[in-house]
Length: 419
Image (cartoon, rainbow, N blue to C red; front, side, top):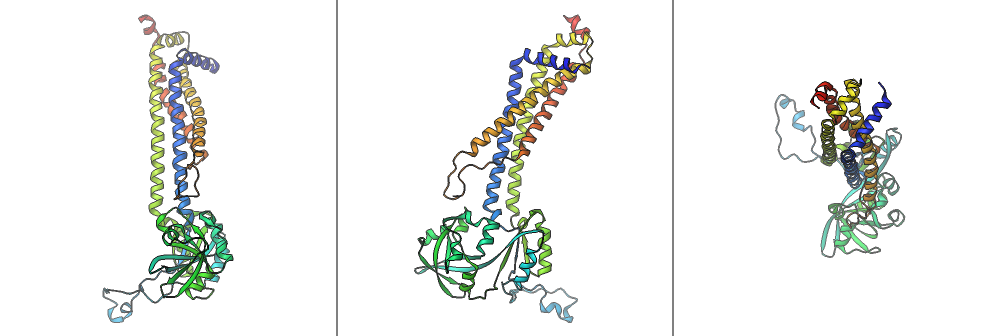
């Protein structure tokens, strides 16, 4: 089999009907361009949503939840051991929110090779006192450096300097929506009241904006020491340990392990954000489905064009077979045509797809709700380009295979006799 000759014949047939060849190639180029652009944009959007929610969420959260004791006294009574005991209006036990022995737990976690970092935190329910009105709020006492390192805290502080709550005593960074409700300006002093009635004045040094309005209406941030002072607690009082792992997929298993070892409640990021993960997965499936549909439609276009080409080139096929070309070699001629369209269409498709994605990436996208975002989100993952190129080749191969198989079975005697 003379490969060079087959390629030359395929080239001659393509250029003899160059308009049809061009239409088929444009179909592949358009399909790959939209496939790459769609996946890049949809996954960029998913990354944006991840940054708004998941990047601010620990992979594992250790805490003590106030809940009823599982083993009630009646279950320990020998007289009722064999029965089924139904207890109504069970009240929570007298446990505390504080994580006991948190210093040794923190040291153990920091020495665990699976852990990227740990950020201690205190969650305090408070009321913001605005004249005669009390607004419900939550103050998060944080280790500023650890919070910024693990959860990019500084990126969400839209006004002021995040480090000020560490350097300035009795200071607070308010959620922007909460500050707007209280008309609190930078430098103002606000008063907060704890659930136990303790009051404290805090200086506003910044605004925090997560992009989630409901969160920004209630949440604010102080240093751990300020929050301990507000609650009247000692300097070893911690209610949460927020953990980030090197490998997020291990979070459920490690969370169960830590819960048993440290005798605390633990929740992993997959459990806490299961609905959000499902939404991301569905959006990804939709974008892949639309992109693959575009490729299949382009494949049918190539199939129709090659079918027409074979019908119009029956004389040429008959002459090739009459001069000694086998059916297999004739089949290869049309497969080469199809693959040429797929390869060059795929190549230009990923070039145009990257160019269109880059253009979208530089379009301004300004919204007051998400000040950290200035342009439309795009993900330049190389796998999108690899998948697009692979599908263009596979689709065009099968689009050319069946017409080529039909051409290989043409009987030259019947064609020539008919002429």
